Image 1 (cartoon, rainbow, N blue to C red):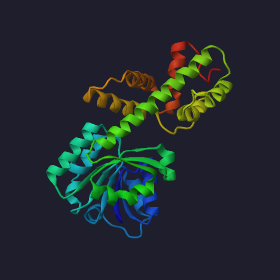
Image 2 (cartoon, helix red, strand yellow):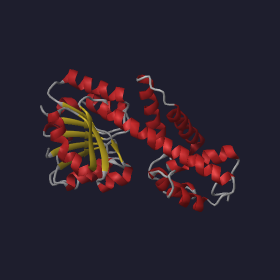
Image 3 (cartoon, rainbow, N blue to C red):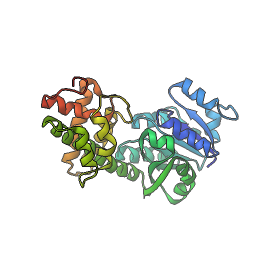
Image 4 (cartoon, one colour):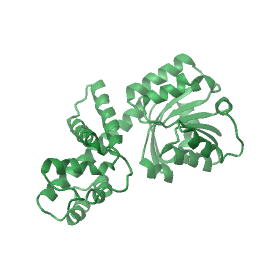
Length: 298
């Protein structure tokens, strides 16, 4: 796994591709923003075309927004057709399990000499930059072994979810269910404290050291009590990811009322024009409903 084509050089894709290059791999970047791809590829030892890169690739790593973009790359732009026999398609975007399974089947119907690896990640921009992502991969034995070096370059925690496409995406959906619900309930708790006149800094300190603590309240809590500023993960990301959780639950006929409630909170925040704020700012929706002033008004 020495020659990689990396499709999707966004806020997470750029550092992920850079870490692959730092591990000694030859990486050719592809992005809808051609200038961004040209800047990334300008650092390569040798300049090659997209077609040449695909023809010599051991793996095609995909890190885009949704399943429609994955299909566009693989089929409309014919990347799956241009890869050599035995290459791995490593799909790391967050998509619904049903979409992942369907895309894998479409690849197999087109060509049965490629490996499809369903490998979504968790850890956000910070994890992508630090090479500390959690990777949840579903693949056959040979493909999983072949992808180990690229996983090791991008992540610290690598889990094998199973052998079938869709299982990695299901593991990611379970992870995102907990992340989204934890953020929502942390915001609800802090809003309750605020409505009753408590000092939020003291409240946060107490919660962070109590049995009620969670990683999310320690990470997002400090930003909930400050005016909007740094964005590590936007509200709109959880609109998408919790939407996938709810879709997955519907497909498997699983009862997930807390995920649905949290999803509606993120959607309400986004529909008020706050989709690009940090996801901690869902607390602003609680403030609006509670009649509490925003941090800017205090």
